[in-house]
Structure formats: structure tokens, C-alpha cells
Image (cartoon, rainbow over all chains, first blue to last red; front, side, top):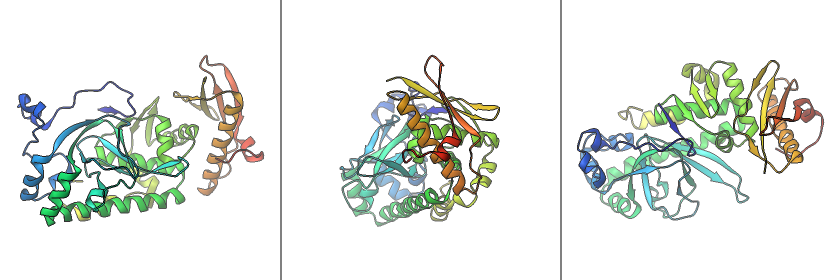
Length: 267
Length: 83
């Protein structure tokens, strides 16, 4: 299955957990099912903590390019992606930007809320459309003050966010664009669980911090190694193990960190 | 602004740029090609590869007319904008 980024494809209706279970009449009420959540961070909560947060959550459909947080702007909601993907983007004062993290079904946005501050640290922009559960900032703040274990769980995830940003800084200075692209595809695959993506070269160029024509070159090289298939704006992973071998030590530290901190998450 | 397509030629293999880029004219096309080629050559060198001078961009307009062939060797030899 392919989902679109950057508004390339028609918006498909996204089934909710409720409609999956056949209670379609309730889907519009945004009642979040008590069943196992699709977001791994929520799934890892204790039954008590999930019962605490569940009534405050609502399902939201995210469109590619939606900006969820603006640098220094107020954070209105924390989002827990189910099958959407969100980019965390650092921006220079002159407008130059580069991606420093990505959040999918394993994580959450709203770093500033969890860290006890009201303003966004970086920009959060939707990369792949899909659904997410969200909770208003005030509601989350209240719950964090009520449950130390809930706060601890989300703070553990913030360690992963930090490791992801520092590892991205490392690879941006040590890896070639081709390897960074390979790493990026692996990370995306980990966070949405799909093999194929619709991505524009313009978008990839912004994520990797290169001129747009260079993306064609990097894709050409990865394709020449038989690791991916690239046609128009469509990229498919052909050989995941090969990509990992190619990126070698440049990939996997944030993911290992996550698995250590959340061993039962199924990540 | 017209849209220009930066196809990448590697010997017999041509990777098509299906997306293209809006640019004001030929001067901007050449500047983009130069900056991008410099970036790729520099990146290749840092990756331990030899200078990729045998490659080129073949830039076409929306009517598929060839606008410019930009060999990467030009980016290795001539000054240009910082990527």
C-alpha cells in the first residue's frame, strides 16, 4: 500500500479503530476505543495510565504539509501518530531548514509540553498523511501532574527524541547524501511499516538539506545498487537488509535506544 | 516561471527528473546545475570516491526541448555559487 506525502494523491477515508470493530455509528463521536492502541507509546502505558488519558484523546486526520507546531509558537496538542508520519524540522533564521527527527506510530509530538514548557522547540510538519490521536496541551499537562508514571513514560520517549536529533547531527556531517537518503528511508520504514512511499524530490531535498536535482542523483545511485525502486515520485524499498548494510553504523542508534527503553512496544 | 527538468546522465543510464523545478530562466538553470553538481562532487569526495566528472545534467523545458547540457567537470573546474 502506498500513501501520499505532500498532497500528491487523493485523500482516502481513514478507518478508525471504532469502525474497524464495526461500531461505525460511533466513529464520528471520536470515542477512542479501549482496545490496544495502534500508537506504540500509548500501547506501552499501564492500564491505569491509558484509562487516564483515553477519554482526553481524539482522533485527527493529518494532511501532508500540515504544520502542527511552529518554532517558539504555542503547542496546542500533543499528537500520537497511528499511521501518519511527522517531521521535526530545525530552521535557521534565514529560513534554511533541515530535518532533525521523525515521529511515527512509535512516538509523539508535544516535546515542549512533556518538558514542562509551553513553546515549540522545532517545527513539526506532517510528512505522510494519515491518522493520529491527539490531546490538548492543557489536558496533557494536567495528567502529567497527576501521574508520575505517565510523565516518566513520555520523558523516556524524549530521550529517544534527543538521541535521534544528535545522531542526525552526526550523520549530516559524516555520511554522504546517498547514505543519508538510505538511512532516511529505513527510518521511515520503521515508523510507518510500509515499503513504498510517494515523496516529491523537492520534499526529500529539504529533508536532506541538498539541492533538489541532487535527489535524482542519490536515488539513481541507490537504484543502481538495487536497493530501491524509484519511479516518478514513487520510492519503493527493494532490499531492506542491503540498505542497512550500506548505511552501516550510520543507522540504528535511536531505534536501538527505543527498543531498550520500550522493550514491549513491538517496534 | 517556466519549469525545467534536470535529467541526470551516467554513461548510458539516464535518470529522469519527472518533477522539475520552477526557475526564472537559463541563467538560474545554469546556476542551479552548477551548485548542485558542486554539492554532489564534494559529497562524493568526502565519501572517498573519485571526482564524478563523467556525469552530466541534461536540462529540458516542459516541451522537452534540450535547454542545457551541464557536464559535472565544469563544476569541478569553474567557480560558481556556494551550494
